[in-house]
Image (cartoon, rainbow, N blue to C red):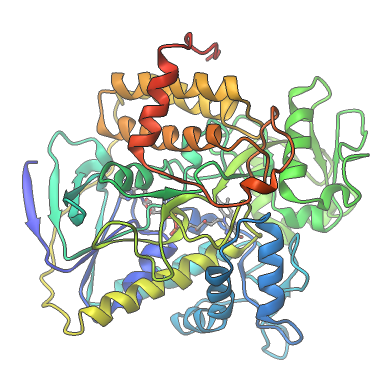
Amino acid sequence: VTHAYNIQHTLIVGGGLAGLFCALKLSPHPVTVLTSAPIGEGASSAWAQGGIAAAVSEGDSWESHLADTMQAGAGTVDEKIASLMVREARDRVQDLLEIGVPFDRDSKGALTFSREAAHSARRVIHVDGDRAGKAIMEALIAKVRQTPSITVLEGFVAESLIAEGKKVKGVVARPLSGKASETLAFYASDTVLTTGGVGGLYAVTTNPPEARGIGLALAAQAGAILADCEFVQFHPTALNAGRDPAPLLTEALRGEGALLIDVHGKRIMEGLHPDMELAPRDIVARAVHRASLSPEGAYLDARQVVGEAFPEKFPTVFAACQSVGIDPRIEIIPVAPAAHYHMGGVLTDADGRTSLDHLWAAGEVASTGAHGANRLASNSLLEAVVFAARIADSIRKYNPRPPVMRPLILEAFHESGDDPDAASIKRLRILMSKMMGVERNRSQLQMALSELSQIEAGAFTQNARNMAASAMLMTASALMREESRGGHYRSDFPEPDPMQAKRSFITLGRARLFARSFQQSTQSADVAI
Ligand SMILES: Cc1cc2nc3c(=O)[nH]c(=O)nc-3n(C[C@H](O)[C@H](O)[C@H](O)COP(=O)(O)OP(=O)(O)OC[C@H]3O[C@@H](n4cnc5c(N)ncnc54)[C@H](O)[C@@H]3O)c2cc1C
């Protein structure tokens, strides 16, 4: 460590919805937000299209939202946690309105709601059709910039936690978006991880590149318990035209009646599920996965149902298609499933506490148990705000007198440059998509584990070691669950096993032990790059 800073107050790692909302809720308590990308960039939050689920429309109820959440979660939702989440939705939506989020309203000024898959009511509030995430983040960023208790340090990549026994005392980070030779230690009273998801560990993902699952490695290396790491939700319809990340073709398109077809126009979902295109996400993802690997391919056809209305009704999707030379008004769109959302993460309790002292986690990096084995659409933004607020309340409660703010002024900037681990990271991402993707089996997972531990051992940078550690935690968890449930599909165990209808827990020690046991016995994985 080249420099050490004793900030004495709360440090939030990550500047997406969970991080910024927690910072605002902590105000006037001083807080420093440390983030790899400038706030508003490099965060899935800003890319969310559909919106935020909240049972606040007339005729809807939190009980119904809870029932839908439990149903989607495929038997492993923590009911107490999910119930907290749906009941607190109303207050958190009120907070977002007060912060200035311009949710869509009808001519009488009432909020409007859209319906998404597996919701039994219209309950997703949105902005300008598909711009919810961007609008929410813009409003939060404006508020953060006006809040004197919040210091934002942009361009710093957290690489490890500082811990003494079970007590977490801050983080070590590298400036210049992780490219500088020096590292900085930030000592804090409390550390809140809000580093987002794991999509960037996959070759095909809808997540921004900053979502590389680093938060999992950070917590696990300090000894924290992680939960449900095998459960990854794959979005069935990402634009399959070579862009990385792969642009998302929102589910609302299928809601409008867009069809999944092969190149000859044959319906892909025919005979697979009575709800066809609107079947549960994991079923559609598997069908699209298989079709996209076949010579006939997988396509989304929205020519009839959206057609000329594309630019106005789905501006984000329209722009993405145009960027690769496809006109969705008159052409079919090639699709493939993409790693989209991680149900697992750092185990937290109802207040966002992890198994380590003074370490908290919220948003996608956390595993609260609210999503079980499969997340209900638009519950993730809700989970991020509900538990970020709970963390802020808890920190304020046991720390009633705010410490004095001593703003830290440090500047880092983005710099492009060669990553000595670029080839290993590419290999890791392909490995995850092929072996730990929509369908898994024992031999693939064993090979992946063995390869991942080699990538970890050969990495030049801490960032690549962290990616490999996170990938190992997920792969070992997938190997241990010998059944199929929610986002976890084992082709060698294709049915759910009632005996395994419970959450899974793992530590890095256990994952490494597992990896080592296969390393000796497995040949190098045959993964074409
Ligand atoms: C395309 C897309 C559409 C989606 N649509 C919806 C939707 O409509 N509704 C819904 O509920 N959910 C949706 N989701 C999921 C939802 O957006 C995310 O789960 C949620 O935004 C996660 O918020 P977060 O604050 O936890 O993480 P993020 O918003 O991803 O923020 C993570 C932050 O951590 C920073 N960071 C990461 N690693 C480090 C590190 N090592 N050091 C420092 N900083 C770091 C990043 O730069 C970023 O600032 C969508 C996701 C995607 C990708």
